[in-house]
Every structure is written in C-alpha cells, then in structure tokens.
Image (cartoon, rainbow, N blue to C red; front, top):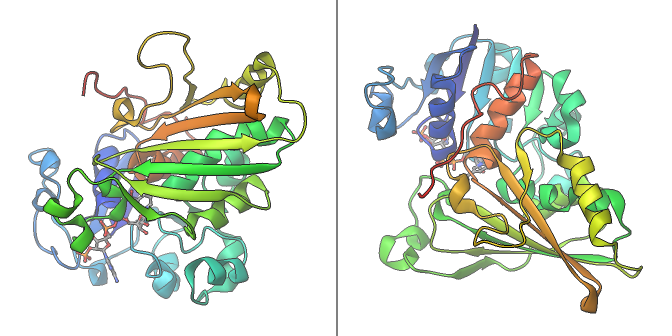
Length: 342
Ligand SMILES: NC(=O)c1ccc[n+]([C@@H]2O[C@H](COP(=O)([O-])OP(=O)(O)OC[C@H]3O[C@@H](n4cnc5c(N)ncnc54)[C@H](OP(=O)(O)O)[C@@H]3O)[C@@H](O)[C@H]2O)c1
C-alpha cells in the first residue's frame, strides 16, 4: 500500500482527491491538511464523505513523512515551501501552476512575478499522460496540467500531430468550481447564477502551457464562465493554409492519438442528441471526450473537447499520474462512468 497525504484537502481539488483516494485499492490516506479546519472531520468540508472517512484535518505544521504528497494549494504557495514538502515524501504530485512551465521567463510572463525556485522547473514533469506517459513513469515530481489547458491540449493534439496548422482560436466555457472554494464578489450567488460572463477574453495564464505542451507559437484563447458547477467545454477553431484533411484522415489522426487511451474517447456521432463532447455526462469522471468537424468553406477544423475540471482537469489526472508513477495500471481507482441522466 502507498501512503498518500494531501496538503490543501479542504479545497475543491483536494476534496475530489480525497474522494478518489478513499476508494483506491492501492492507497492508504495518511494526513490531510487544512489550516482553517485543523481538528475538524473531513466531512466538515466534504459532506459527500460523511461516514465513509472518519479522519480529521490536521494543520500543515503537523505533516509527517509519507510515500506520496499531493499539493492542492493556490498558485504561488507550493514553491514557497517546496523544500519542506520534498523532505517529507520521495514523490510529489503538484496540482497548482507552480511547476508546470519549463522556463522561469515563461513563468514570469504568464504569472506576472518571478519564479521563486527556477532551478526546480526542469525537475517536474508536465502531467498529461497522453503526452508524457513515459517521462511520468520515471519521475518523482509531477506537475498536473491546468484544467483549461488539458481540455484544449487534448482537443488539439491529433490535429497538431497530423496537419499543418496556420492559426488556432480556442474558447472554453467553464463552471464555477474552477475558481476554487474561496468565495468572492464574482461567485456570490445572485451575481454568478445564470451568468454568461466573459472572464478572460485575452491573456489567460494557461496559454503558456498550451503553447509549451503542443510546441506551437500561438493560440488565441478566451474563457467564459457559464451556469454550471463542474465542467469545461472547449471549442477550438483550427485554420490551415493547405488543403483541409479529408474526414477519414482526421479519423485516422484521432484514432492514432487516442484509440489506446483509457481516458480519452472520440465522440462524433451522425445522429442523436449527444453527437459531440458534453461536460454534463462527464461530471465526476476522469474522461475527456473529444470530437471534431470539418468546415471546408472556411478551411477550418473545429475541435471540441469536454471534461470535468476537478477530475481529468485536476484530481483524476493526479491519480492517473500516481498510478503511472508507482507502476500500476493507470485505470485503477478511476474507471467508472458518470451519471446519466444527471
Ligand atoms: N478548481 C479547479 O477546477 C482546479 C483545476 C485544476 C487545477 N486547480 C489548481 O489546484 C489548486 C487548488 O485549487 P482549488 O480549486 O482546490 O482551490 P481552493 O478550493 O481554494 O483550495 C485550496 C486549499 O489550500 C489551502 N491553503 C491555502 N493557502 C495555504 C497555505 N499557505 N498553506 C497551506 N494550505 C493553504 C486552503 O485551505 P486552508 O486555508 O484551510 O488551509 C484551501 O482549502 C490551485 O492551484 C488550482 O489552480 C484547480
């Protein structure tokens, strides 16, 4: 059994991680930290776990050694104490943005401040299994990708790998849990409920990850908050100056990229109402559904993806990475369907 502890367990990503690790057959949950809830039961922040887990939160100061430490902290916090965390566990899986980028300059441009530990940026492996499975398997330090970045990267990967691309415009519609458990003026129910709010039409930090992971020069990215708690749907418009690939060539590219992937499904049906990826069916699951459509009139491919931001976009991805890092089937503890209807 692997003993895993969680820092930041009272947050949304940490809470989802507790849910997954609780029923993971190869994991024993060690400590779970929360500064604000130390000494309180886990179900004080995660009511879905009542009677399933009788543990209490501890303060981060009480952390002791474990086999794997998950960091579910706000951006900029993990890198401040990374030496301490590294002294507690031989393996670390970070869910924040602190170690996702390869270069300190790139970090400073994207996050508007210098990186505190630039020498460690190369120590962490970017944790999208569909891109870097082999490196994750031999890494002790893995940085999970951003949720929007994961959705856009997995939507675009087969196209980038098989076509000559001129420009990309990507748009995500996202649910409120993406903003974390801390309330704000924008998350206040009368303000947030029913809103369709353009919250980052330009300048989103995840663009740096997308460019790095796909090895592309640019992606024009916008994000819109919509009436949903969990989920992301990404619509990516890919323009080419060359002849548009045929439908069958695009199918080949998607099958080549994903046929053997346990958590990426190609969703592109000719009839029915669920012809393209939809986040609603994916809530609580580790799947990312991807699809595409050709638009010959505009020499455009529309690549679509959907996922649950707290699962394949955070905790599910983290558990998939754990499985790879400890050398067991990456499906373990993650292979369940969502609810239908939900
Ligand atoms: N939400 C998503 O959809 C999502 C998706 C992908 C990645 N992520 C990333 O995952 C990380 C966590 O996100 P989240 O949505 O779970 O955020 P969150 O709900 O705000 O949770 C963060 C937790 O960290 C703890 N914390 C804050 N500052 C701390 C500090 N200085 N030392 C120790 N603990 C501290 C807080 O609990 P206490 O104050 O009680 O200690 C809080 O519960 C973020 O970096 C986020 O960007 C989130």
